[in-house]
Image 1: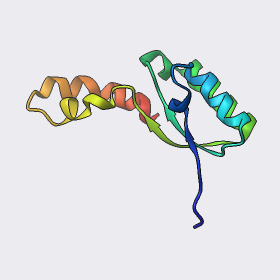
Image 2 (image 1 turned 120 degrees about the horizontal axis):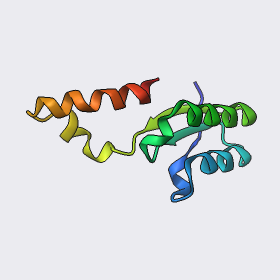
Image 3 (image 1 turned 90 degrees about the vertical axis):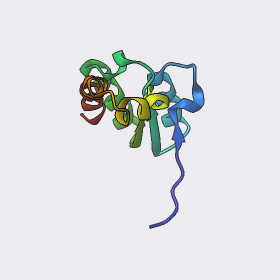
Image 4 (image 1 turned 180 degrees about the vertical axis):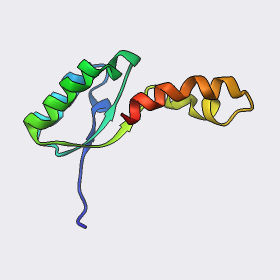
Length: 96
């Protein structure tokens, strides 16, 4: 496999995620890390909009970066079990 280049939508922060994705597509990037910046960006309608943009520019989302990644070890690897179970539905949305 040849080396492939891409860009993160976070490169255009604080521009909104969908606008960042649009710019990356217009610039010709085919591989994009999608940085999700808020819970509302996991809604079905918002995800549909992101999909429309990726199809328009024939881009691939190769990774997704959650806005709460700074706290992942706190959510997933602490001894506070309730917090672990509370965060799982949010991860489910990312995986969808």
